Image 1 (cartoon, rainbow, N blue to C red):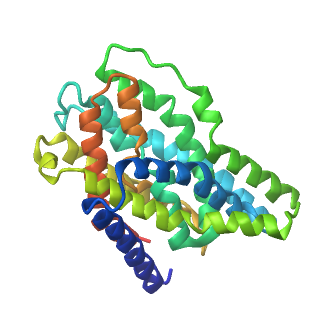
Image 2: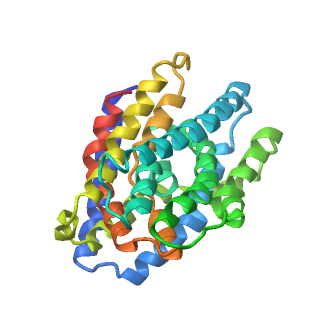
Length: 309
């Protein structure tokens, strides 16, 4: 890997986050606009980026790598869930915080932040594999993740099959796989429109991350230790465990799989932690704090994790 290119891309990404932060602090963009931009990202530009990454020449090796990384996605997310469950008592997680603590420790921000960073660092082949790995995230976060969040309440969460199966991102992955496997060509104007929308994804997602950081209060982060321990597991411990295990696996020279897995697992807590906490009577205030803290500190930890590649 050319680390000069990696550091340049990271610097650009963090500069975009900085622009979003400044825009939020000086109220250049309102909270209502932020919601609309997030919807634009998740429903249009990110699906366009994902679909475009699948429009490539058929490669049997890439399809084989897709199967491997899907299995690794399930393996590492389930391993993270097991480790977080075992560490609840040693870390003395407060009653009422256990669900969001385990959820934060287990799952990373695969789509909103992970995809653009993988694209910037590893290109379209890396994004292709990250999209496949995201399928394991979707299955587990709306099944196992719901069970975790219900530890903080008396509710019994049921598996949300609709959210697992039907989303703009999943639809774009399925359509992309169809065109990848069939090698059907789309008209040039259609692909041009898709590529134009897809090109907006990375700067828009980084801008929105900065915008969300601007809404948080730094002083709130220093109340209680649970947000810090969950962030430590999310940003450092879980990626390190994955890296150590992947060193024992024979991926072959030049494989994108270790890089994609490490980048995805090094991402901060996903926004779905807050969504599930609000939906199932979990500790939404703590969930928001964990998302904010991990999103802030990942600016330091992501470059450190990339030194392992």
